[in-house]
Length: 112
Length: 114
Image (cartoon, rainbow over all chains, first blue to last red; front, top):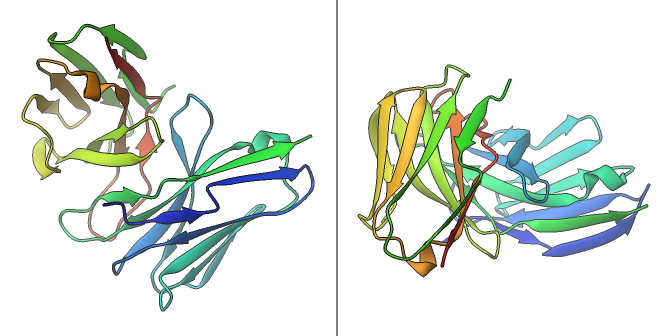
């Protein structure tokens, strides 16, 4: 079964507004990553936060991680129409059999 | 220059056929993956190779056989295709295992079995 569960499944906002997506996971992790997938395209890595970090910023992106609650959030500030995409969280367990386990994603629509 | 490239981008085939998808990465990464994305956009790992060695095989039917001739290439061969194999297949690579790093994805191969 998948590790991450994103919430909400779909989000529609106006340009300029902030978008917040949440991710919950079940087992202990080494890191958590967020990816973006534009329609019909591959996934693009946005940001990685390690289990010993609580918050990370990258441009208009802000990611938080709460390992006690097994949850993470992705905030996109001042959204643009070009931010319209599906956003996935992925957890990595580390170790010799490293793999990313993805959630089902949040479809974000930014209306101009 | 495309970092992770897959061919073909689209593949339509009949049930029972055998087909292959090719993947190449020019990033110098050690680890490569195949993921399957279903119609509900759920991504599930299928295989992972590190330096041509299979390290992850996630309960995939043995009709699916990955092959890594060198660490820059990871191909996926599928025998006796079934309707349920219809999905988008993504190849990805990452620089190392262990502590975990980002994965770089190809554009995907949309497989339709009719």
